Each structure stands twice: as structure tokens, then as C-alpha cells.
Image 1: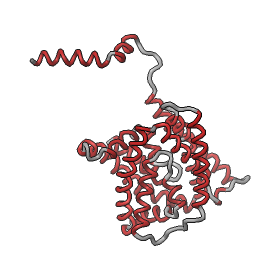
Image 2 (image 1 turned 30 degrees about the vertical axis):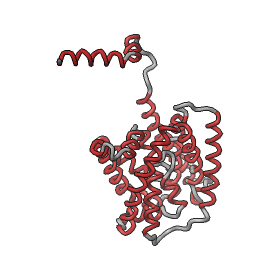
Image 3 (image 1 turned 45 degrees about the horizontal axis):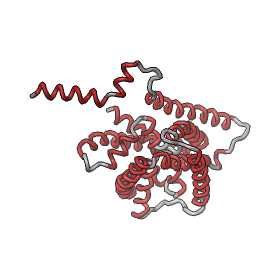
Image 4 (image 1 turned 90 degrees about the horizontal axis):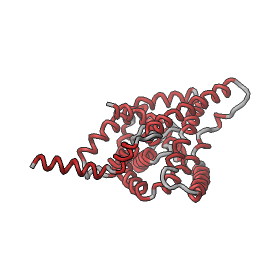
Length: 300
């Protein structure tokens, strides 16, 4: 039930621009285990399915419940909505920076982050004028939509809503969910399944073998999408709408940062360890081996 509820929260992140589902998987402490379970799905099928099923069901429920809300908010309160998304994505920056620095970070990775951010900004700028909005998609475009959703949901820091917007598919995605347009949703679902299986396998290998390099590139791409959250409807001036928008931005940023701190707080180890705890930690293997031998001899 806990994983089902967490899946609903991840689904909300998957539909909301600025807060990707993979970010929430990291915050909720499910990312590594989820990726590993998908990548090794057929090695231990029963165990992996039992773990993944409630998360997947919750994810689907979260998307369908929240899609109509997002659609309504973007139509009626676009400026407020986009500033809230910007706040949510800004609040996750400290969490991702800590993830990048977790294993063997040095100056060369800092320059890699800057380079990846610049490349991402250029790519998003180019894509802005290349891909028109899709209204009547073919099967191939629907599968691409599904693969994009899968990839941006799996890779932390890559916001599916922003990527889909630049591919001209975001409005189609939200409206199809809101109206249950099965001619689009069924091939999109096939694309999601294919994308999840393939991309999670690749990401799992990259994280296991090139952790800091992988997360540095991800972090750079994550930073590059930030300027693209706002559009022409979000111009600030000296009026009430601008004041409310800035207030919403700050509240959203603090909320997102608070979620990140919960994850960090859970992961922190105690500052003080007793001599007994240190001894047990250093000699864990020996202690287990001694007790196993005793138990084995008793059974004989």
C-alpha cells in the first residue's frame, strides 16, 4: 500500500512540468531498486513483479487523476501553474547535486556539467523551431511519445513534460489522457513498455559502471531545461499577478526542497558510533560466519 501511494505521487510528477517522476523516485528512496528490478525483470520475475506492480498501478492512477487538473490549470491559470512548476524544479537542484557528488566527484565532472548544460540549452533552442505541435498523430508518433515518456520518467532530472513540449507532443499527451483517447493511448502504452525495458537496462549498466559520469550528464541536462519552463505568458511586471506568481514560486521551491531533505535525512548515518557498533561493523563477516557454524553444528 505504501508503494502504491508512492506510485501515485510519482505519477503526479510524470504529468506535471518541472517535477519528473524519476526525481520523486529518488526522493522517495525507490529509484535504484526500481531501475534494478526493471533491468533484471526476467531473472527473478516473481520478486520483481511483486515490487513493481503497486508502483506501476499507483503511477497510472496518479497520471489519470492529475491530468485533468493540469489541463484545467494550464488553460485557466497558466502563469501561476508554470511558476509553481519552476519552483518545484528549482527545489530539487540541491538533491541532485548531492547525488552527483556521492561517489568520486572532482573538478573535471564540474566542467562536464557546464558543458552538458550548454549543449542542452542549444538543443532545446533548436528544437523549439523544428517540431510543430502534433494534433492527429500516426502510430509511429504515438510510440515515440511512449518511449519519450518512459525515458524521461526513468532518467532523473529529465522532465517529460518539457521534452514533450519541444517535440510538439505535450498537449496531445495531456488532452488524450483527459479524454481517454484510446487510439493514441494504446500505441503510446506499447511505446512506454518498450522504452522502460530498454532504457532502464542501459541506465542500470551506466550507473553501476560510470556512476559520477552518468549523473553529471543527467544533472547538466536537468539544468538546461530550467529556462524553458516559462513562456511568453509568464512575463513579470508590477501587478498582483506577478506578486502571486513569485509567492507561488517560493512556496513550490520550499516544498520540493523539503521533500529532498526528507530523503537526505533518512539516508544520513549517525555522527556518533559506539565502540561495539564499530567492532561489529568491521567484523560483520566473521561474526556471521561464527554464528552460522555454531547453528550448523547444532543442527548436525
